[in-house]
Image (cartoon, rainbow, N blue to C red; front, side, top):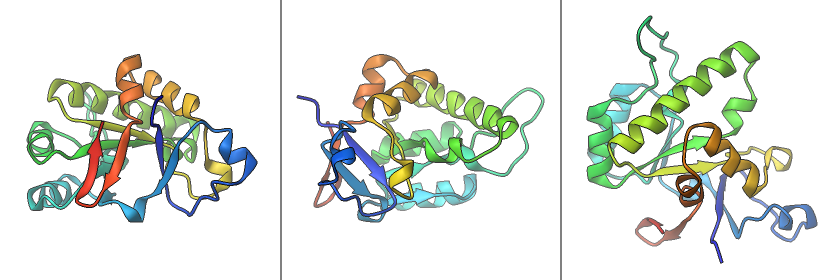
Length: 174
């Protein structure tokens, strides 16, 4: 049996009948984990060097403008080498993608796709989640896996990106 876990930003009532049908074994609040959301490449490097981090969430949300020949996706080889060394996962949340307009969604989706390719190249662990703020933002496990496939993950990578567990010292990836 697969152990699929979703990361959210609120306390989920697991006894709610609709929540039971989503296919997740557990829901973890982002504040229960060591998650860094937002910032720029300098702040990411500072946080990664300190090493007190489980997941670097949505680095593609940077406000930098894309260049003509490359995207400002928030990650580079230096950051990914640090993440791989410190065993920090890169998180891809579905909520930020659903909250922007169509033009910005296309830019954000392209940045996420680039980050998936970079994570695969530098062998950095990836995490998929809904990152919902309320009950209406929750998505099923199959929807979140499909989101990973759209980003360019293989089926096995998308499935593995939903399998981790919270331990006393942090997160253990299965």
